[in-house]
Length: 474
Image 1 (cartoon, rainbow, N blue to C red):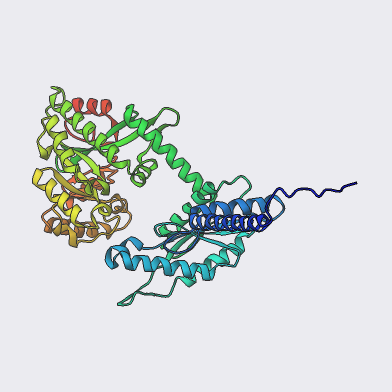
Image 2 (cartoon, one colour):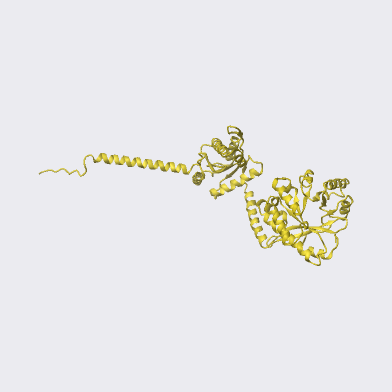
């Protein structure tokens, strides 16, 4: 029987070639894995500082939440925002600003714990995710970071100090990362408003206040659009004759659900959110329109008085405000002296270049300018001579003590003398009795406002008074 060997179908040297091919494929796979690893590392890294970026923060948060789902504590987030960085960048330049950002990154990294994930979210904002960390431990880490940022940063030719405002929020089971960032950011804003270079823990009451503020802003937008706002008018009277010389327009909100809302409940929100300019334009146009109606009405035309409206600090900072005033007067064919703008001390005390330009432009236009609530705030006599104002409205707190303090009238006489020496007219607020009016008149005060002469009234009721009265009080 003849035996046969199986025939070799592959050449003898094929095994080595296959081995080489396998090694080559393996090398390519390893290189591909390395490239992908580098691409992933770059995708998770902030190019300037070498810290993680927002994507790295997302991954760290997901990992921390997964750990929490299996029994670990919830993570905490520290949000760090540098104080005064924009001014530093403008003064020192981009290269120095980048050096500051890199140094800050190194200091935060050195103060954080080994398992904490330090990231830069952009510009001058950093975030530190602390896995499985209760609030007291997160606070300790945050304070250690603030301490690390205290020393000056050497920039070669000079050194700068770059403190930070910090917000802390410990995650709750329902939180997304965006929730956590938003609430930590609210705490950062609280830190900045309280003097900066502090750590503030998120307070749920602050979030509720923000949500309420957003709701008010939305409803106030609608109120302006749908005529829910109304103006009440209060007379300003010449003390010697009882003749009306002006009326102050006071805004109210006739809310469809909550009824009449007084300005102290919505004006601060309007100022804080930038809505005050739109509200101010509505008051301006409505008030001068009402004055035009009184001038045209034969039953009220015999009264020749000015309209007084309040002006905010935002108005003085607006380049369009002077044009708004001029156009509103022109549309109603009213002389500029028919309008008096009341400026609070806080609105003008900054006395910056734009404020001075706006006030000078209004003065040239010919409208009256009056300092409102004089004495309630800064009470600096120096700016009475420097500002182009015509009148001073003295705060009601000075009048209320008349009759109780024998020396109060002499004190008011001294204030009146200062006002007169500056070449200004004085209007005295808060007059509630005939005795107060007579006392003020006896020391040379010319004009007054208060419940003795009349409370603020809606337009129709004030019109009825104008048709019926020649002097005030009734």
